[in-house]
Length: 192
Image 1 (tube, one colour):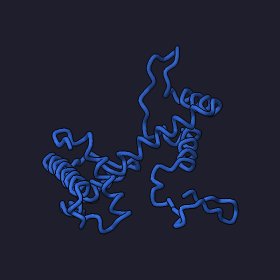
Image 2 (cartoon, rainbow, N blue to C red):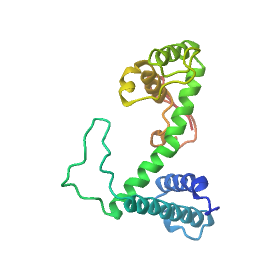
Image 3 (cartoon, rainbow, N blue to C red):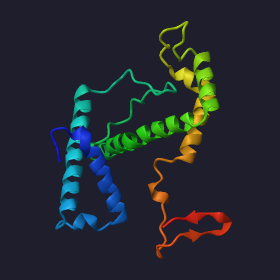
């Protein structure tokens, strides 16, 4: 594994190891296997990268000017999380957004490409908000938080795509013990 360029392989290797542990909870104890040792090393290396990110954020100090999209500021009485609590949270945010965001965007683009009327409606909606380049405006204006509630059709398209093609559906897979396809009541089918 190329540990000099951790952003290229570590997230994927760590995600695969996490998936393998879900499928085989005793996997972490099978240290005689080369793949277990390599995947464990990748996960530890990712933890070091995440610790480095947390250290960098701590060194930069608190961002007093940051507000949530709703305009709320952090109450003064809140305490910073300890690293042992912050690291899992940071890792979860990093890993959850690593694959799922990219896959969702890819599925949205695919779904829109299959329906020209949907694409036309999205273009119309973006143009109505000046968020798309046109002959009159060479560059679109930057999107703002206030624009998001106005993009009703685009939001509905993204949500429908996520319903049709859920990218985080790994926990919903079922396999039949017999190895044969199983038909359920209501016409649902489990593929082996």
